Amino acid sequence: MLKNITLSAEEELIQKARQKAQQERTTLNETFRHWLRQYVNAGIHSSEYESLMKSLNYAQPGKTFSRDELNER
Image (cartoon, rainbow, N blue to C red; front, top):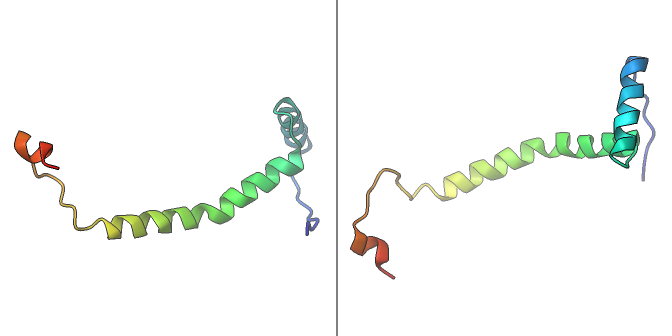
């Protein structure tokens, strides 16, 4: 369900944003919804990254491998 909200900005900025959205074949509303989703999910991606790095903590950087080690299967 979509809910209306009211935002305020300079008239010239809104006009330029609408023109840019039109050039991108979208609307200012859709652009805002896209931005809002990214804004809300920004923390999620960083926490996923941190979880991934913790799961890879067994890998120690800096070790060099011999040719034979690199070719082992």
